[in-house]
Length: 157
Image (cartoon, rainbow, N blue to C red):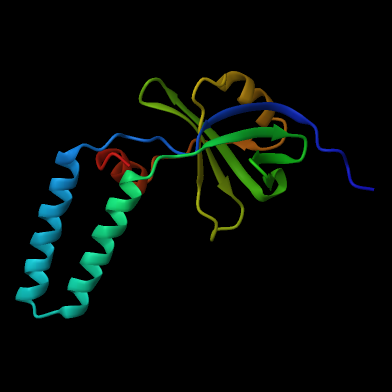
């Protein structure tokens, strides 16, 4: 008989931190795209040029996309993000990066090395309460900021 899943704590937050992009951001993206296309033309590399155009278009679309509001829950079985459950037995460690206003997020590292690290925004959720619940199920271990974390902050993603 399956064990009942009880929610210990939940909060609502955007699925990622959104930074408003003004015309300058898109102009810089356009300039970088043109420079890289110039390099592709100079190298006579048609495939590289196509890759630059597709990547720039994808960046522009992703930059304009607004995040949806997601429900994050800590349950007796694992961490639930909307309808998806990440069981505690699949999680190696967690760390709370909490230094408002710069950092307010929960970092999750999974046991499987092919799974990417998960970063959950905390918004106004109480980090002490989250830690108190998670420490019962998962070990707490400092997680360094990755290169992609740093780049996304610099590029305002």
